[in-house]
Length: 65
Image (cartoon, rainbow, N blue to C red; front, side):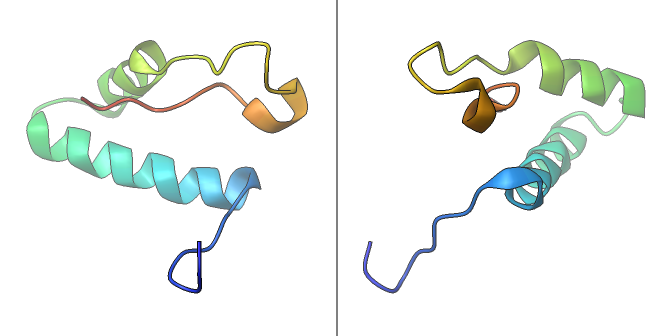
């Protein structure tokens, strides 16, 4: 990776990633309320599968596409 990128993990990394995803969804759906945005985030993500330890995978990967 060189010195341009840094690998992150844990809730601090996840919070930043999900916050960015929520910002994109708020931009796309400005009339959506917080519960609707939460439902979009939770229903469109996908699991990493069993190949990754449950300790490291959380609830999966956010997908705002």
